Length: 433
Ligand SMILES: *Cc1c(COP(=O)(O)O)cnc(C)c1O
Image 1 (cartoon, rainbow, N blue to C red):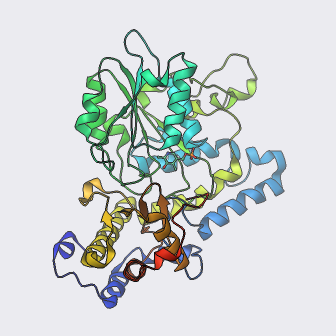
Image 2 (cartoon, rainbow, N blue to C red; image 1 turned 45 degrees about the vertical axis):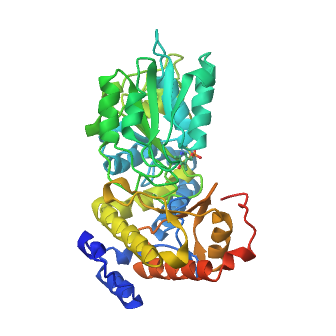
Image 3 (cartoon, protein in one colour; image 1 turned 60 degrees about the horizontal axis):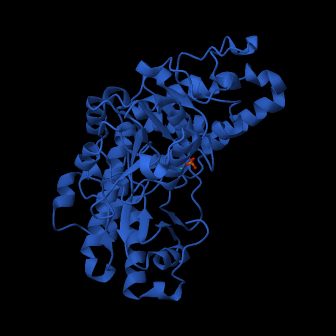
């Protein structure tokens, strides 16, 4: 389905049309590779992606290499553990538009952000502040606050949070205006986790550099969802997790990217896995860092938590990120059109960008009783996620969701709203939302 179909006011909202879209879908075969929770329409792959058979197999394979080889698993088997972080970094590089040596699989989003800020935030003269935004993910703010304190600065005066005009979106122009001579470092999301707005990373990186500011991005909500060109954009660094769109399992190992012009910069938080691989076991007390993103690792890699990524990335390679992005846009566009067509029954606001180039992989609906609407959706077999205070995120994931599921989820939502079914549920979030 192209843009034209969606622009057509006479959107075919029949079940048959949804079935036809599935029949024409060239990525449809990947659904069989996943364990889909029985009887559920899983639209939460932007929070925790589903387990695939290939990830299960790669995890079991690495478990088996431990069984077979004991300590020799570091160098033996199909995926020697000693080189696994680098091997996976090379496989991830195309998804973020980086060179192979610029990416390493390590840590978590938040620990990697600590590492990057410890490495890149070097206050000097008047340039002592860090620039962020008021809509960013809380963990990033906590990390920036603690890094400022470690350097002896108060976050109250030294952490700038660019304001949003409407609580949904950020304006690149305003971010750029805030890149003053007092700012040393900017840390921004690629995609806002609530509204799904994509920030113009190319423009922001260019503006930052023109103003003498280093810039890093948090890609949690964009990796595996949209295309990136981090090297071409000259982003200084980026961090992300692999358990959302990349389906590598709860708390699986994250990743980071460092632009090659910075390779050689001494890691702010060093450890023996920061070492050049051939020097590490010399056991010297003087660190010789790797000449690659691997220098920003700290300790022994979490092999079993990285293992599912091996299988998962094979599918991204086979499906092709461009094809996945195209299907994702088609699905979110289709979902929005169905919702808009039922607007008078729905009484929800669409809070994500409507334009393709600004919209990431999920739809964001706003309603003041979003918490209990999410509970009602779950009770009806649709898995969304609630984001305080008033948001419902719905992510049709191109690897395993179908157009039919999108169609059904919208019908269920309409019923819940029309019949006010949601009023049977408490309007409060669960412990995990
Ligand atoms: C999911 C997410 C995180 C999570 O950080 P972890 O360290 O992996 O727990 C951080 N930032 C953003 C924007 C996220 O969406």
